[in-house]
Image (cartoon, one colour):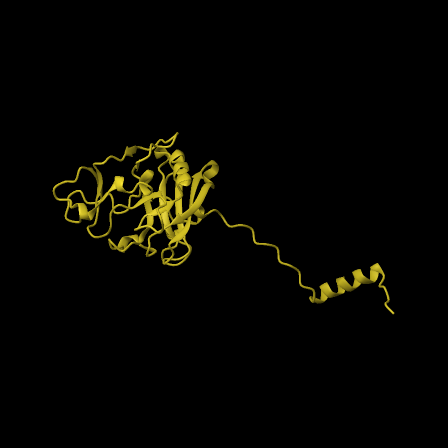
Length: 242
């Protein structure tokens, strides 16, 4: 025969168990940490930032997020999209080797935009239209190394360069990433962009879906000194280092 306990007895029993420490109490969830840009050592000094983060150096996928710094210096997320990286993952930008199909980690300026397709409505960035004569010289022996050229210079071999118009999907729209750009180091790498997805992993660039690339170009403002930070979630190439 079952005996019902009086409500007061049940309450008393629970209180006794709590006092004795024998009843597990679910911990409160930890409050969310500050946004990623607040945890970074440097964001480039502007008020716009794009972060491209992979889970580890060998990963070929991750996420791109674009941020704005507003009132009281607080960063807020504006948008995000899945990202693709180099076929061989990521590599420290300062020691990267050209031709390794790795995406260079680090913090970089975004010199200008370009594309085969027209610039999205609202684009404020300098936007170069790709023509049949547009190349990106990657020849280490050329004076035009890691530069856009209209018509190949005599010292820049076509086999060591990208004919931009041949990449109809990827270079429909793109932003130049300022990796090895201001003072190019031969053999470090050339032609690193944020561009539209192709069929799979990149040769060293960062890529996003076409819709996301259009949104980024309509949002990014050269007057706000935007930068892109590329890295991993943890370890020596963690984004928080930059």
